[in-house]
Image (cartoon, rainbow, N blue to C red; front, side, top):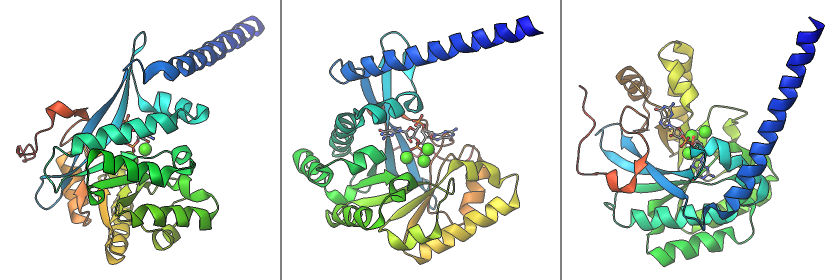
Length: 275
Ligand code: C2E
Ligand code: CA
Ligand code: CA
Ligand code: CA
């Protein structure tokens, strides 16, 4: 038992080492990923619950690594945050997504994720304003998705920055609502135009009536405060009917579409009918 215990421990050490080395390799490779044209943006439609037609699109970054293949953002966005690379990468994603959106129907909004590190970076507001002007996208068409981790800092500074951003005419969206410490107070303190209900909740709704009750209550509250709601991670028609019953205004998930390259988006197609 001792020997195998020691063996396990050594195996664990080797694993840890491999993981650390991998992190290091990815960190180095990420520095050149933008210049090497390895990053790409995919787009996932968000549908209006009432019409089931696309009303928005979320931009999701992708990395085609020359050796490891497609890496999920969960794998490399944290590295980009730790190294500060998320600032230039995030700026590139924003510009790319906004430029793409200029070719879409005017009612379709483009949602771009913003890391807390990027949110805190100096010159953010000017960068966003400059990007919109450069590509010619009306600010009302842009949604910036932030998570509550952005809000866990000094409130007065965050509030100032959020107000500067919304003064540009863009929309601020609270992502992943319902996980972590989401406080109802956030809905009052910050100028959100929409909240996205985390897919963990949406997934549980079918099994647990208490989850459905929470989603209905949060949706009612959001709408009373003049905010829209998007249910994330809708994968089945049962889930769609539940989020519809809960009053969510928008839905997003594999039921409607996977994230796909810009060229595959088709806004004239009603891809969303019960089959
Ligand atoms: P998120 O912002 O919550 O994005 C939604 C994630 O859920 C995406 O994963 C999307 O592909 C996935 N998803 C959509 N519909 C479904 C569904 O029906 N079922 C399931 N199981 N998943 C669904 P993805 O693209 O792997 O991104 C993961 C996370 O990485 C994002 O979570 C976001 O936090 C981060 N991320 C992605 N793109 C960017 C980016 O451009 N900038 C920043 N800062 N973060 C990004
Ligand atoms: Ca998001
Ligand atoms: Ca989310
Ligand atoms: Ca998430």
